[in-house]
Amino acid sequence: MTTAIVTGASRGIGRAAAIEMSNNPEVDNIVLIARDEVKLSETIGLLNPRVRARAIVYDFSSQEGIPSMVKEIYDEFGSIDWLLNIAGYTDPKSLLDTTLDSMEITYKINVFSLVEMTKECVKYMKQNEQSKILNVASTAGMTPRPGWLSYASSKSAVISISETLAQELSEYNILVYCISPGRAATDLRKKLAPEEDPTTIMQPAHVAKVIGNLMRMSEHCLDGQNMVVRKQVK
Amino acid sequence: MISLVLLSSGSGSRMENSVPKQYLSLGGKPIIIHTLERLAKVKEISEVVICCTEEYMEHIARLIKNHCPQLNYKLVKGGKTRQESTWNGIQVCENGSVMIHEAARPFVKINEFERLALEESENAIYGVEIPFTVLKGNGQIDETLDREELVNVQLPQKFNRDKLLDAFEQAHANNKKFTEDASLFFEYYPNDAVKILEGTVHNMKITYPIDLVIGETIYREYVLGSETN
Image (tube, rainbow over all chains, first blue to last red; front, side, top):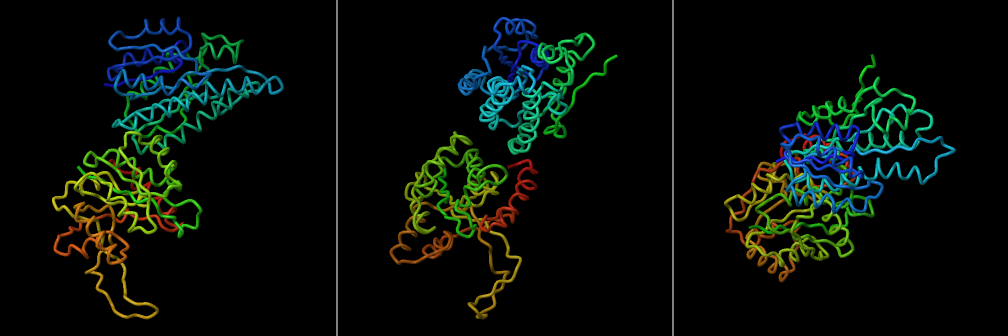
């Protein structure tokens, strides 16, 4: 029995990845986490009905409820095998308009919650023969633009965290993957580049396909590396 | 089932560090955790008795909660000497068979605990050959020793708990000091066979600062590089 947790599953790459996971015959249970209850229910409706799915409404701007939420998932499904940390947030502002409060929210969602989710899941994953964690960073974490201070630096942190944990968790056969999507047609991208025509750039389903392939393979050569996912624009 | 006494009350004075070596970091986590995480997966061991100083009891409990909460363990106050600490630990063991290990040997593998547990002989230790020459002397050579007849004694070790306890009581009554437990056991039970299982040179004891440097390499190449941890 394989249980996969997908955060940020109410829209964008998270939703597309959840659908992709539901089509993977290795996956038996999917737990979707996001703060938007209505959109989360819509995602559930888009999943392949062969999987047992559960939606949890949770706002990652706070971390206090994460340990009990993960324990509940473990108690219900009996194992936690895959964790897909996809939830993301951005509020692009120039340095002089950036407040520490707005930066803190970005870091809480993009970094602290990712760490806390990973930490709590690893407690259970250590009992498995093999487990997988996939973190979605961003090319912004490597090639930032003016005005992306909080978001770009938080995604740099996700890349670094992934590289650290791939080494630290290898003793327990927990593979940690990190992908950095380039421009993808998501609500988050609209905030970063509102002028862009979303039909001309990479779609969430393209990224989800890459995630699906990574999670399906049990290879040991791509973990711990930041992998850029880009589709050439025609 | 077997009880395991884990010695963790050393001060690590040879490490030239105010923190005892078993709590220093190796491979990104405290040295003692390497062993405890593996012990939590050995089905034959039903309880782990950790001998430590009172000062570190809370610290160990917190580490176990974070890294291996499923471990069944007890904390026992260590003594002034290694011998006293082991004795304190054995006294609270619930099983008739007891293993001894030390927290400063973090590269012992799960299958080494299992092999020792399943060994038919009720008393057994790990040992490796000595690849260098050892002489008897103090300032000058008193006697040559044949290294073919010598064994580098390692841990973990396994004993009949009641007999080991009795041996410790006799050693205490006679005020005799030993640096490890197989020697002590053999002194009072010379007719009880203690089997020597072939150990591995990787199962080294972290003692000097240089051992941490060597240990990082062993962790990376030997522990992470193998299928069975």
